[in-house]
Amino acid sequence: MDKVYVGIDVGSVSTNVVAIDENNKVVSKQYIRTNGQPLESVKSGIRSLESDLRRKHKVSGVGVTGSGRQLIGVMVGADVVKNEITAHATATVNYVPEANTIFEIGGQDSKIIFLNNGLITDFAMNTVCAAGTGSFLDHQSERLGIPIQEFGEYALRANRKVRIAGRCTVFAESDMISKQQFGYSKEEIINGLCEALVRNYINNLGRGKKLSPPYVFQGGVAANVGIKAAFERELGEKVMIPEY
Image 1 (cartoon, helix red, strand yellow):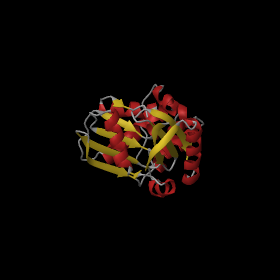
Image 2 (cartoon, one colour; image 1 turned 90 degrees about the horizontal axis):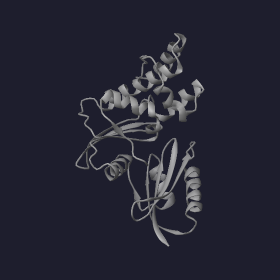
Image 3 (cartoon, one colour; image 1 turned 180 degrees about the vertical axis):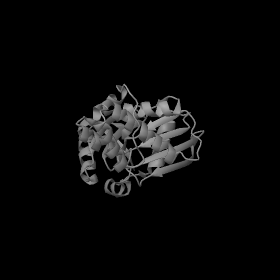
Image 4 (cartoon, helix red, strand yellow; image 1 turned 135 degrees about the vertical axis):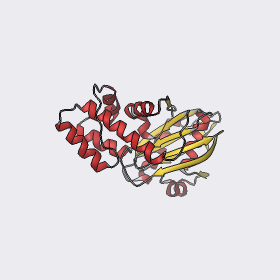
């Protein structure tokens, strides 16, 4: 039986369970909505992983990260429990060894991590305001009647620029409603929101710090092409998103 190593990332919005072989190749990956039940989401992910591997592989180690790592680490008897900063940096250096700055936006919080020659030199986290996080974008996509998978694509189709307040979830939503009443399209409002959230992210987490490329974007919000495009316009540089 071939050896595999299992990684579990337990977040507030989603849980990811992945198996890699001895060459760091992904053998199986499972994505599950946490829905406030981390134990159940991990059980579901492990059952799916077990079915996917079909008893052809032997699990030789388990690592856990994410906001629920301590609880889940005990539950599964993890060999390694790492904080999210370390996990993001390690993964980034594996895929993009030359990376200098990591942007990470998840379901409930966001982070920025600075690297030098593959080592963490500084980081900052925002766990106070939900503006720009995955849960906030989920809420706005639902309010506008747009599937979250298509949210970013709408931003790319905007014909006009519109400035949206992005420093607070309440102000952002109020401003979006106001702009709708002024006749701006959904595409223009979503694009304005993406730009506002990126400005807010850089101003808050990157304040007083030197941001230098190569830039790598991680976390669930990295799947939003509108946010990625807004980062690239704001920075004047390409932003890389790893496959996993």
